[in-house]
Structure formats: C-alpha cells, structure tokens
Amino acid sequence: MTRDSINVQYPALDTTESVASAAITKQAVTVANGINIQNVFSNKNNSLVIIAENTGDAASAMTIKSGGQYPNSMIGDLTVTLAQGATAVQIQDLSRFEKSDGSIDIDFATGFTGTIYALAKWAGVRPVVS
Image (tube, rainbow, N blue to C red; front, side, top):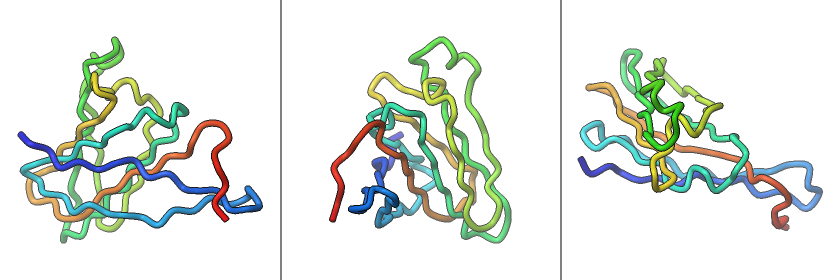
C-alpha cells in the first residue's frame, strides 16, 4: 500500500511569546491509501495531536498502527472512534507507534470520509515570528 503522507505542523510563537498559532493544512483521506505522518518525533516532547474530521453521516474509526520500533509496540494497534465532526487524539506514548523512519501509519475504516492533520509544539525555545 502506498500511503498518502502528511507532515506535523508546528505553531509559531508571536512576538510576546505568549501565543503560538499555525495556518492549518488539511489532507483529504483516501481510505484505500491510509496516512503516513512523517517526522513525528522531531519535536521530542510527546505533544502530538492528530485531528481527524469525519464528514460522513455516521461515526467511523481510525487505527493508529503499531510501529515495531520499541518493545512497547507489542501492545499493538490502537483503534479510535471518530464521531461525526472533528476528533482530536493526543498521543501520549509515541514510541508505541514509531516506525524505524520516525513516522506513524494510520488506517481508516471502510466508508470514512474526511480530512486529517497533525499538530505538535516544539520542545525548547524556537524562533519567534513577528
């Protein structure tokens, strides 16, 4: 299967360093392809949030695939119910899903329609955008 790829999006701090914001780019989901989220681990702080917007007529599901990189991947895949509208999923144990290239794969239930994107905050001090 050739997966569609998305990148983690990082908000930028404003000049007061009090607020970070990002212009969001959404990826339409092609169920047959699934999604590969690239560079998931570049933020180094377990702040990954995946937002799936279910535009279908009923609840659906996405499965975050076990990565096989670390021993806790033996816990296996994790299926998350996606209600109609937007569902935000914060991943607390990223290494459970990490692949050897630092990405995460996601599959969707047959019939899912909608979009996906991923956000994370940078660890440590980052440049401020004015």
